[in-house]
Length: 419
Ligand code: UD1
Image 1 (cartoon, rainbow, N blue to C red):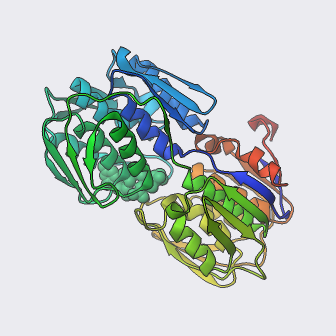
Image 2: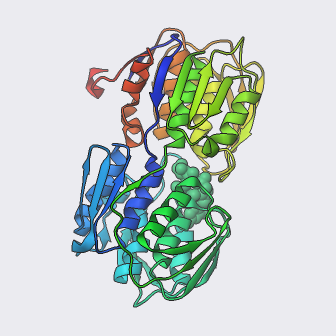
Image 3: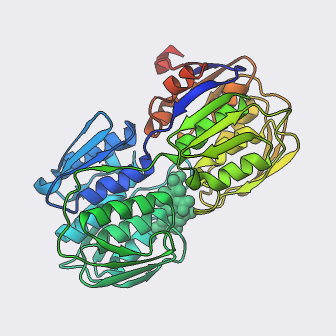
């Protein structure tokens, strides 16, 4: 991606549907015999990968203008292969539905990735508590259960993925399941709403304790719209703030971004939120350095940490940024350094000493949100920024380059060998 920076963004743009809600909702759709249609989904690579995985399982699914159709009653294979799981860790979400509905699943262990180890011990703990027999063989989790039975599961740590998987397994189990210390992320809430529309009995959404009473059968849902993508919205808002732009971002559930918006105001950004949209106006002078630490929802999202760091790189003063979710999620730091940012890391803590201005440079994207941070930095920097390995971006942002161009940014994606 080539960015000629220094232009304030101007105009109106909309966030799309949430990738991180669509993936578990797709997995939920496997629990029925009848088809489901999920609307408002983003056309991004992770969702196409999930659809490919469904094809391998024998389910029919296709995407048609931001709509996903899933026909699950043809499933005849229970193996999620390494080739797909390694590119998209959310593939692990098929474990719960396959086990709950068909009594067996073989899913590749996800392994680590750029942002850190990706353990699945809490997913397995939940499946075992529900009565599954689990073996790890040749890099695969092999799980079987005649019939899952409800259980009380206390998660020692909040995990979005394990909460989703346990819920997906428990909705068809016999009896009642209680999940304690469950994730309160909006994407879990959205998945639960979809499951309820299928006929599942779940209480306590958003409270940290979920009570699930197993039912014998779930129905497909013919019309369900996923929640807006809070991370995409935050990325667009951060880009507008950092370029001192005047931008309206539509399709935002502002409640899902309340801490981020509060932090922006604390830093001196001119943002106002109302009725599903956020308006950004140019702020005077520089932002004020403002620290954050990432935490499970409603804490500051790990998926906005890199973008926040880009913002703070030109704020006045020193900000402390602490990453509590992923141990290796500072890969963007040396790249921001190439653009003139002054950032040091000690363990999971980064100290950002704000500089007056960044300057365009050649940098390398290491993961999805790091790509977003480098784009935000590049849009505000003087001169040209060239971001290599921008393919990471396609995993989770639909046409971000087009959206930025519609706001007046000079952004082009060239074929990799064209750089
Ligand atoms: C996490 C984030 C999510 C973000 C996603 C991608 C949280 C609670 N979740 O979701 O917002 O969109 O990364 O960046 O912030 N863990 C274990 N054992 C397990 C599962 C997880 O120890 O079996 C640990 C992880 O190492 C991590 C923490 O729990 O430190 C949260 O992981 P989890 O929420 O499961 O990860 P994702 O579902 O990918």
